[in-house]
Length: 193
Image: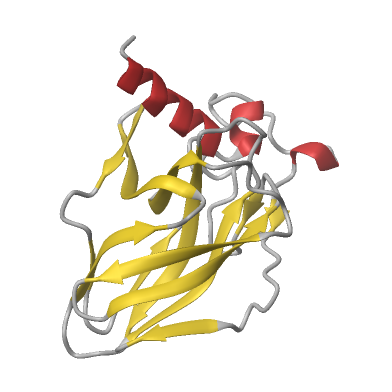
């Protein structure tokens, strides 16, 4: 396996919903009775009503999950609403906590999960809301300077094509945190990231 192939596999394994990979990626049978250690934790943002504005764009619910001490990657999740009449595009992201950041998409092609960067950025259509969430679009924090610790925050600067730069704090949640709108692991055992 090449180094890049190994890193891609490690990134996917690190960012999968922990309950999903703790039980395997089977058919979802037998997932009805879980103890507390395998249940997904509800997202608990310090201020769930907080919002950050750049031009016509509003960013809400920015978070990431706690990582293991030597994890090289983490995922960043948030929601972007474009209340304007013109399309915009998330073209880059950066953080002092990550040596490199990319905007990624995870999709299932049959039984195969693929993940990779969006080289042209992520479109934010006029009048639309785009969610970066486990199992779909997300920010990839790579070459972490250290572990992401539950209860901390990490500053991330988002760069939009039209609206410019916007710095938001990613709230570091539990290792198995998921937002209310994210699919539960029982619904799609392959979901999560």
